[in-house]
Image (cartoon, rainbow, N blue to C red; front, top):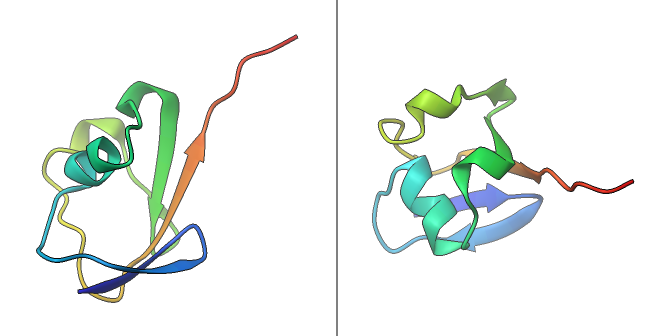
Amino acid sequence: MKVVINGKNTELAEPITVAELLSRHELHPSRVAVEINREILPKKSYQSVQVNSGDQIEIVTFVGGG
């Protein structure tokens, strides 16, 4: 299954949820924002939303600092 993650073409072996995708990239859900096909996902939906072939996904990581 082909998707685009942060502008990079990516092949996924099987369908996964957004939560599983974040886990594979070692990203904690509370420290990112996820957009699929230009729609921002609420964090509460990460466990239920499936990544589909052709999806364009943007993952933004929050960075603290001063």
